[in-house]
Each structure stands twice: as C-alpha cells, then as structure tokens.
Image 1 (spheres, rainbow, N blue to C red):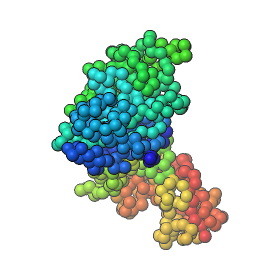
Image 2 (spheres, helix red, strand yellow):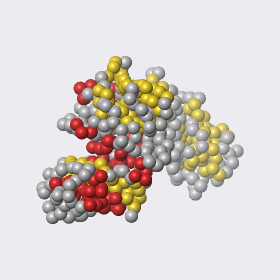
Image 3 (cartoon, rainbow, N blue to C red):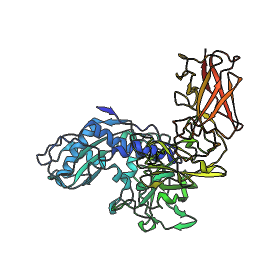
Image 4 (cartoon, rainbow, N blue to C red):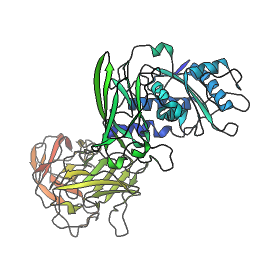
Length: 553
C-alpha cells in the first residue's frame, strides 16, 4: 500500500534568498513539534501506529532537505514499508539500543522489524516528536560513528522515490523515542540517476541556507566519482577557513567526500543548542567560498567551486524590488508623502493590524511590533501583516537623492533597501487593489464610479491617488488633512480622460484623510467616449500608471 507524500514541487533556486525563506516558512517551520498521535504502548509491546498526517510530516521534512539539496522529491509514502518500520522503531524503543542487525534475543524482536532495520536510517532521540522522524538529525549526522554521513547520503539519494517511516515518542517507559526511516530500496539503488539541480549534491547546498541548518560536517557527493586525491579549500572574507578532511568511504548512497569545519570558526546557531553554525551569522551576510579540486569522474579530473551564505530566515527581509507604490505596485523610487507597500517576510504579525491614531491625533508610526524607517525616520503606518506592510514616506525626504528603507519587527531591522527619491510618482488607487482596472473614483454625487454608476459628461469626478509630492502648505507626517488650511500639491497637474484633456478643479490633500493621499477633481470632457475610458494623471511631468479606467455614461 502507498499514499501520496506531501511533495515540495521539485527543487528551489537556493541562490534566491526569498525562495529559501518561503520554503523554510512553508515546509520546515510548520513541521516542528508536529503531533505524532501514537496509538501503541512500548511497555506492553504494542507497536501501534502514528497518524497519516505525522507520516506525511516526516516525508515532507525529507522533501524540504531534498529541495534545498536540489534532488527530486519523494513521491510515495509507502505504508507497507512504514508498517515494518514501526515494528523496527518498537524494538529500538523497547531495548533503548540501535542496530541494523538486531539479535533475535531483543525485546519485541520481529522479522519484519529486523528487515526494516537493515534498510533504514535509525535513531534514538529524546526530542521525538519535536523533530519529526529524526530527519534533521540524519542530515546533521553528528557523532563519532557518522563521519561518512551515511544517513545524510541516503536521505538525499537522488534515485529514491518512496520511503516509509516508523516512530515511537519519547516517554516514561522509554527514555528515548525511536525512528526507523526506510530509505534503501534495492530496485532504486541501482536504477538510473535522475536529473538534479547540479551534477553534484552538497550539504549545505550552494546559495542561501538557514543558519541553524549549516552543520559542522560538510559533504560533496558526485555519482561514481573518485575522491582519492581530492582536496577541499574554503575561504571567507578572503581568509582561509580550516577544514578537516575525512577519509572517503563509499557504499552509502552516492560517492561522497566529507570535511569538518571546526565549531570554533563559527558562532553557536541557537542559544543553548548543541548545534553550531560553521559559518558567520546572517547579520554579516558573508559567503563562504568552497573549492573542491581533483574530483575524478570517468577518468577526468575536474574542480568544482560554489558559495554558501548562511542567514537567519526568521528576521525581517525585503528584496531590493520589494518596496513599491501602494496604488500602482510599481517601484523605481519614492516621492515625499507617498504611500508605499513593502513585500517580504517576517515583517509583521500573522493577523493584520490597521491604522490607528496616536495621542496627538496623528497616524501612528508603530503598529504592534512593526515600524518602517526612512533614513531612520519612522513613517506613519497604514497596516502591517507578516508578508506585507504599508506606510507613508516622510515629507522630509524631499530634496534627497536616495533614501534607505528598513522594516522593523519586534525590534529587529531588515537590511536596508536603497531607493532614489523622486519629486513625484503619481499612482491612482484601483478598486480591485491591483494597480489596474477601475480607478478608486467618486462621482459628483459621491457615489462610487463604475459601470453600474458611471459619470456623466460635464460632471466632476474625484480621483484618489498617492505620490503627488510636497504640498504648498507643509503639514506633519501622519496628520489628518482638513479644509482649513486646504492644502494643494506644489507640482502642476494635468488629467486626460479617454484621451481627452480634462479640466482640473482641485489637486491636493482631501480633508479627513491622512496626508499622503491625493485627491484630484476633474471635469469629464464632452469628447470622451462612453464606457470604461482610460484615465491618466500627470503630476510634475510624471504620468500615473497605465491601465486605469473611469466609467462614463
């Protein structure tokens, strides 16, 4: 019997930090402390079972590491193999010992359990089920008996397409919990090698790697390679990193060379954790350059080089193109008073927090644990969410060439995104919040403009925008606009509706809304065709985004 495994689709591009963060958040973090729902009783000699969800969590964690390594995913959770693996895990938990060839004298010995032991990665762990299936432990492969990282090599073996898992939680009757992860399938071991992201498989992989998943033992696997005369060199910041090359030993998955980066060369990955990161922390964003020389494949020697950059995927992170207009979702710069949106990771809470006023009646510059800083100055906050934050750029950035934007969550700052400051960057809000389509426009009678309530020729429409630049009468950041004084944009404004010039009656800060929102009132020209007419607003010589319409009767 088999069941579909929870599949990470293919492998990711680990040179993309954002792709690694997304995979970490969706396919690693949710699987920690996953409930096992164990139905057995070790003291009574009952192997029981674990839930289908837990088994899938184990295989999903396997697929997380395979996706990072650039090998195809496990596509089948084999329930027959899992049944045998459960009997193997029972033996290990009952005897508090591990063996790939358990003696028949063991408590709860069974032939099926022994069969599983001979085909599996096996472990005893007090943290089960906190780290499901010992999968992370197999990848780390620490311990004096694991210098050849055999467990890691079998988990990442490219030919493998199905696995089984058996698990026993740690408990009173058994100090250690146990896992039996069936990884060796004879028909697949000698089968054709599928395509992988690179011709080789490394751990840690090239590119960005979560800091806590960079272990002391590094490995490089290459199908049928001869590592007899292979050397490994590592540098960081131009300085050599000491490595301890381990004697090559084959017969565990693909041919592999292993080296140790001593723990003294890197900081502790987590306070109180026995694991150490053999690379600088994410704050330094330092790449470690690896060069592996004299790898002989088919009689030909070759050299391989790659970079590994460890980082903390739990910190606020916004890509260089992640700060855009909140109306058009276009980047390219920031204007004074523009409402912007930042897209990224770890920027805010799981549930949205929306705009609030502070004790001075201004839009607050902090929502919950989130702030957005522009050259260190906090901007008024519109809303915050884990992957998306919106704020208003301070008017004080006017006249600057560039501004550094940083996102703060729980007191931790993201790396800065540096953007040019532009005088104006007009963008029309749209009803569907996509940046195109029906504009956020009110008719003269204050009804919402659209196909159901189109504007008539000669009437006035109110167009809502941002990115208008400075005002003729300065105000405070986060101030709610009023009619006294009525503030106008300093830059000239023109409007075209349906390709025809429209008379502008007002261009400024709409009363009752926060400074940064722009209202432009224009008369629908008689020459504009009826229907969904294209709308364009130019402020200070800069046109608003294309694709926005206004409905005309």
